[in-house]
View 1 (tube, rainbow, N blue to C red):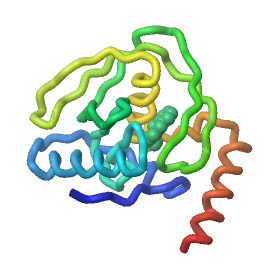
View 2: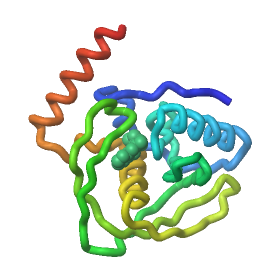
View 3: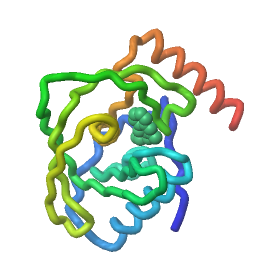
View 4: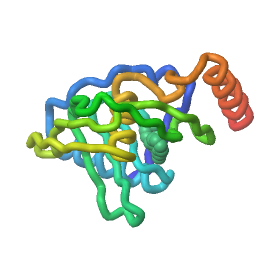
Amino acid sequence: MALLPILEFPDTRLRTVAKPVTVFDDALAQLAKDMLETMYAAPGIGLAASQVNHHIRMLVLDLSEDQSAPQILINPQIEKVSAETKTYDEGCLSVPGFYETVERTDVIRVTAQDLQGKPFTLEADGLLSVCIQHEVDHLDGKLFVDYLSSLKRNRIKTKLEKLHRANA
Ligand code: GNR
Ligand code: NI
């Protein structure tokens, strides 16, 4: 088991488009375990492999209060079910300390594979839907700050760069 360092905005490695997973082996299962441990320790409700500098299409999440419902989604594909959108105050472990309102599709259907490569489908609304869309954005090199005005995004960028300099 290992805690993995989380990349932070504006690190350009977060802009990498992740590659599909083709090999479902023990190393993949170990990375999923380490990602869950890293997410719980942070603490967060989701984590994309991109955030720990592994540019493959895998994400983990757990919306339970007591770490009782870990989920692993590999090669996730999102289909919009509702045309309706909802807003949510989003945060991100790669943008620590900042929360902003983001508008996303309310209901989605997600097809993904498990650690054995077996496909499954789930329908999501509410926070689960927000979280999956936020994580799949990471796999596409996107961050929630991309939905904000450039003024807000640049303010966040400047503040985080200053913090990173102070911590260096
Ligand atoms: O822990 C997290 N909380 C959260 C809250 C609102 C919307 C999205 C999220 S995901 C975030 C963890 C994270 O950065 N995942 O990529
Ligand atoms: Ni995030």
